[in-house]
Image (cartoon, rainbow, N blue to C red; front, side):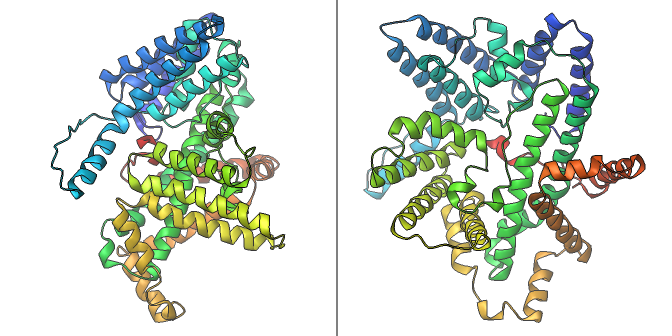
Length: 475
C-alpha cells in the first residue's frame, strides 16, 4: 500500500476519522492496529516477523536495563538476532552467490544453496531503529518502554515504517504516549506537506524516471552527452522520490499529531561530500555516526585511523542500501571522497569559492549515483567509459539537438515537461522551504488558494499514468 495510491487514501481517511473520534486512551490502539494492517497488506506472512522482533526486543531491553552482570552479552545476542534476521532475508543470497563465484574462479565447483525469500518491507529501517533503541537503553540514555503496546507502535508506526525516517526512542516514544488534541492548523500543515511530497514524487520523480529508465534499460545505444544528461536527471529523480516520500510520511504523521525528524536539508547545496551526508538521509547518517562510527573510535585515533573508520562506515552504509556490489562501491566511493577531503584539508588551507565547492560536491555525488542506479558494475563502468565520448562536439548545436531527439523519443512535449519539472526541482532546492511557505502564507486568500489548486491540478494532469514504487521501499 503505497502513499501515492488510492487504496492508501481510503486507508488513511478511515484511520484519521477513527483516530480523532476515539477517546484519547484508545488512540494508540487505533494506530497500532492500523500499522499492523498496513504492514500485513504487503506480505501477510511477514506480519509474524515484525511481531516476533517486537516481543524479543521488548523483553531484551528490560533485561538489559535491569541486569548488572550480563547486560553487554544480552545486548550483543539480541542485536545478533536482529541483524541475523536482516542478513537472512536481505544478504544471504548475495554472499552465497559471491562466494560461489570466488570458488568457481579457483576451480572449486561447489553448489552453494540459494534461498528465494521476498524482502520484508521496511526491514532495514525498523531493524536499525530497534538496534538504536537497544543501544540507548544499554548506555542508560533511555529507559526501556514497559508498555508493550507503545513499544510495538514505536517499531511499526505506519507513516515511517516503509522508508523511515529512522526515529530514536527518546524522540518518538514520548509522542506516542502523549495526549493529542485535534488542531486545525497542524492538520492543514500536514496536508500541505503531504501534497508537496506527492507532487515531488508523482509529477517530478516519476516523469524523470521515464527517461532515466529508458536509457538505463538500453545502455549500449547511448553514448556521450545523452549519458551525462541521464545521470543529471537521475540525481534529481532519486532526490525528489525519496524526499517526496519523507514529506508524505511527515505530513501523514503531522495530521495525526506527531512530528517526525527532518531527513533532508538541501543536500545538493552541500559544499563537500561530508557536508552532503549531513544534509542527505539525515536520520541514517545520525545512526551510523552514533552507533558505528563513534564506537569504532570516530576521529579520536589519529588521521589514518579516522579515514579507516570512515571507509568502514560508508562501505557498510552502501551494503545497507542493497545486496549488490554496486551499492558497496557506491558507499566506498563516498567514504574514499571523504577521506580525500580530510587529507586535502590537512595539507592545504586553500580558500575555494562556495560555488566551486557546490559544483565539485554535486559532481562527485552524481558520479556515485551511477553505481547506485546501475544494475551491475558493468553498466556503471560503461557509463563512466562512454559518458565523454565526442566531448569536442558537446557545444555543437546539431549534436545537442540530436542528443535531445534520442533521449526524448516520444515527442517535444515530453522534453518541455522534463525541463520545466527539473527547473521546479532545482527551484525548490535553492529556495528554503520555510521562506517559500511564509511567502505563500502571506499572499491574499484568493492567490494562496489558487496556488494550492494549481498544485493539485499539476499532480492530476502531469502525473505518470503508471503508479511507480518509491525507490527506497526496496531497501
